Figure: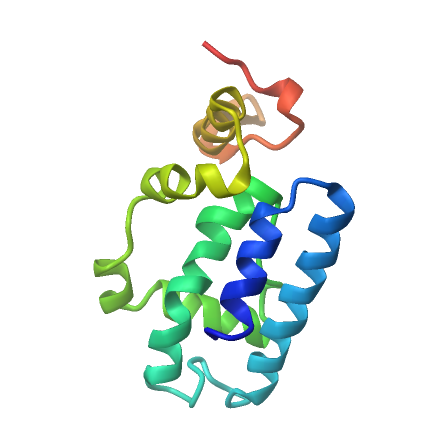
Length: 157
């Protein structure tokens, strides 16, 4: 984790050119795949049904994928039902991990300078994360759903 995941994470986050972002995203996916391939086939944790040192070592970086790389670089969610997806779910829903995970805003604030974001770009990222719309189906209101789309669709106050 410290030799391959962490440095690749920062190279990806700090890259400003699109071609470098793509290159480092692929590197990070490759490094994650190596760890997933070495894990217990059924999981959900690295060694099987119980959380282990490997999970605890990797958990902060797993969390940063969705809290930092997803908003700043468009990192994809794991495929539902995949071994990686099962592991991510298990780690993110572990009570000890949840108790020690910072707020999404703290992650955004902490990594803003690494991502090279201007304050306006950061505002757009935050607005996209919190902007919701009501879904209307069959003439009735339903649960709130995340609004998807380009930055141009985001309303800035």
